[in-house]
View 1 (cartoon, helix red, strand yellow):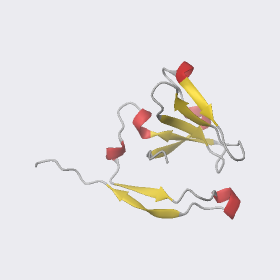
View 2 (cartoon, rainbow, N blue to C red):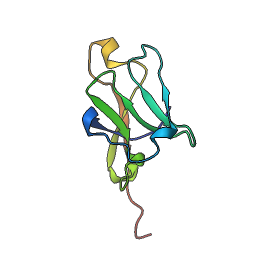
View 3 (tube, helix red, strand yellow):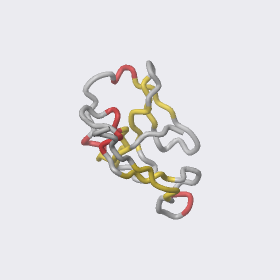
Length: 104
């Protein structure tokens, strides 16, 4: 489980500013999706999507100025079965909510 909040972007809209030489590729099962991790710290950075081949899923923690805590609510996908293996659509297992503890 990678436990990352991922956002989508079109393939041509992702630009790696630094650290491209540190990325490690991981592929599994069908080998269609390409998952990239930092070879130094192990963080999941982004992946090409098997379900939407024209997009990347990007870990928001790897985007300057963004944080997983920028989102009030994040859907958690069940992750066991791929939408293409079931005929489409992601299955939402639940939601993770964030409420700021400011003012305490």
